Every structure is written in C-alpha cells, then in structure tokens.
Image 1 (cartoon, one colour):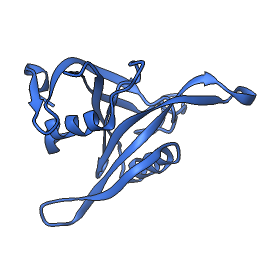
Image 2: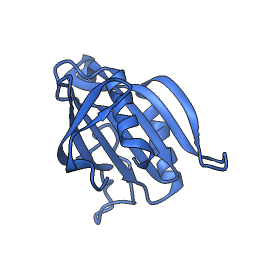
Image 3: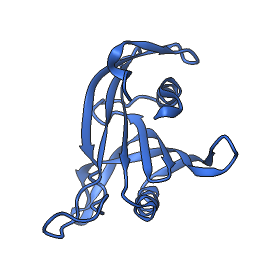
Image 4: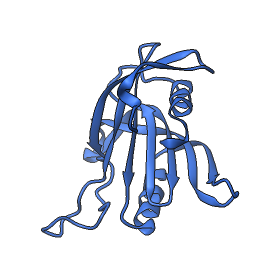
Length: 168
C-alpha cells in the first residue's frame, strides 16, 4: 500500500475522488480465533487488520485493510466463520494469470453489532457493504466505515476496490 497516502485520485467509473486520511490498525471483534497461533499465555489473539482509511468525494468514509494468516488452514477457517455472519451478494473465485484459482472475491453486507438484544446477545442495527478478497494466506477487506451514521453504498466500496487495483 506504499504510495496510497500520497494524493487524492479518482475512480473514473463513479466519478468519485478518494482522499487517504490515515493509516489504521484494528482487530476483528467478531472472531477470537488466533491469526498466528495463541498468545504467550495460550489465550487466543485477535485478528488484526492493517490498512488505510479514505474519504470519498461524496463525503462517505471507507477503509481498505488486510491481514496475513500464518497458515492456509487458519485463513480458510477465518473466512468460513466470517461468511456465516454476512449476507453474500456475490461470490466468485480469484484466478492468477494462468487461470489457476488463488482465492476468492466476495461482495457482502457485514452486520454491525451495535445494541444488546434478547438474552444479552448483540443485535445488528445496520449492515455495511464490503469486498472480502483472499489470496493464499492473505485476506483483504474493503468496506464502508462503521463510523458513518449512513454507511457508504456498495458502489463506493466497488469504486475504492477499482481505485486500489489488484495490489490490495
């Protein structure tokens, strides 16, 4: 992602401009499986994502981040568990230049747990659009920010994906 924070650039298909705002680190609070084993006290470590936040010219906030699992099995396990909580819009394999499958691309709506529900469970109050892309042990997430009152539409997320290209 080197160079992403250098300047504002446009995504021509939507006419949006993207201004990089900050480098971000966050963990996925919906899953406590270890990304690379367990902590020193054998407790699970959270799955940390590293990336950048962006502001689109329509005023919406978006993020692009990735994590690298220590094994393909852990990456697959995380994706399988994550997909149980989302509404899948589109799912297809990602291929390399030789046509070999290297991962997946999933367009989905991610639930945001924001309010306690029945029996102490957390009930999602809003859904945010996202693209989840895998390649081997790497998992990329491009999504609307959960901080906006009204999240960016899926078209903004797809425009950011196009802006970032295949490097992310």
